[in-house]
Length: 414
Image (tube, rainbow, N blue to C red; front, side):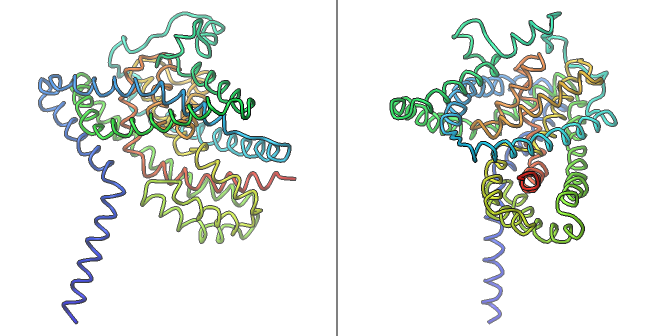
């Protein structure tokens, strides 16, 4: 009997360890290689610079994947978008709830950087990182949202025009109905193929990003490591304040007195599951049940939460604010001021939304952030790394925000 219990405990332990490794293996490997790269950059900078080209090769292939990823993913998303009178009104309320959460959390994250800047305003890598010119606002707007030639769309420097073009193309296919089905099948097939190809490439991410990080630390010094540590700490603090104060206050405002006890009882299981699996999608059913437990209309919950899980990305919005400010500090671009606040928060919202709309969206979001800030897309690797170190708290905020968006949507349904 004793041996059976001992074997059972050993089996349970091994099963739990296997589950942890299955959920976190890619993250653990990536963090391990990043740490090794950082140590190499500080202790052996000559070695770090020697292996740096391996990281550059990986990033170049990753940048090459971004263009077809955006084209196929955005086209397919808009191709499948169907609207009717009732659906249109519901979708409008859903987008309104997203906008409220985006604005509040992005401004909250930006204000935190005024207290603790990840790097400080005196740190720079090189003036070569900044590509800003003395363009007028009109010239900047034209260059940001459009290109003068079709072939220019397919460049990592013009992701936003490519996204707009892809959205129009997907909407056109949808309006064609049966006559556009052949081209629609091509888009869907292309989306599947490029997603699988990107997945194969990402198997090399630990080595590629590890070598890139080693070279970057060797060139910039240990200040960048300190910046990553600050981002990690700042983001955890922001996340805990968000789920501990901002979201509960919103629930209280939407559902009235006595709602908080019900909220905490219902939200904890899906939140813990999301953190354990680093996936918001896996807890969609649990979050729907949470919304129902809070008195939300079933139809509203079942419509809002799947959309919010893919597009809202509230935790990622806060993360992109920190990424943007860190990138501006690296390139010596001022990050303090009303215009800077609007720029950073606007870019963070757009970049985070891209994560859900585009397969492999974190890479696309990083490149888009660089191009919209007017800095070299080659610096995207620096902020791609941040996505890994803040993954767990970002997933927690992403998960809970879908339920909060549902409550807001339900509150304004009349």
